Image (cartoon, rainbow, N blue to C red; front, side):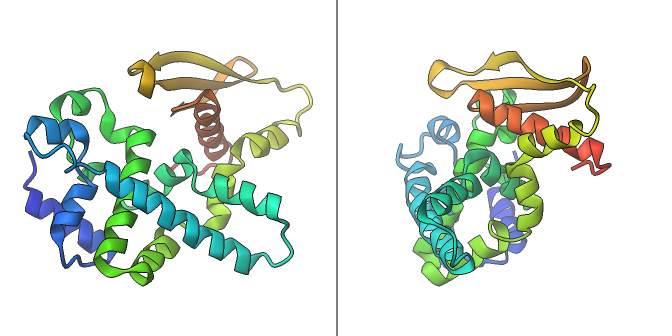
Length: 233
């Protein structure tokens, strides 16, 4: 296993935020499977920090949308915020800092691909926000969110609206047929993940994994869009 001190140091360099209390950062990246294996206090994983980070993220993103869109009605603000901070969107943002590689996972979770799972990566992203808020206050948390969640919105909107945009792209060729197929399910009932593939005229053009079928379809559509546009992420 990688040296934990090295992991903490590297992640702080990656995010540009130096923790006064590195214990908060360690907790933010500790999955319950690792805590159980190491016999860490059951509250020593990221789940409580995730709860706090979720609230901070909602506040900051709400303020951002409110100020940036003075003519947007309440219903649209709510829908836009929900799409910006949903699980696939947060996992997308987390991959910009390769957050998955820093998570402390138990051997079983590691073996089943937990490091790449959207549900875990997005949860850790929220926990990291919560940890920064506790360590440095709302200003530091806001700076992190603006830098890593609310930046590059044009590309993120491409991801968030991927199913609609892919459909529009394919409609340019009236004969083309797009369909999504559920090809598998993994994980326990309470934390199930769906595996979906997107097909164009019977040929696979993208694959996705998500906690819901809709999220998996969205990821598959995004991968397909990247291929169609010649941009592989």
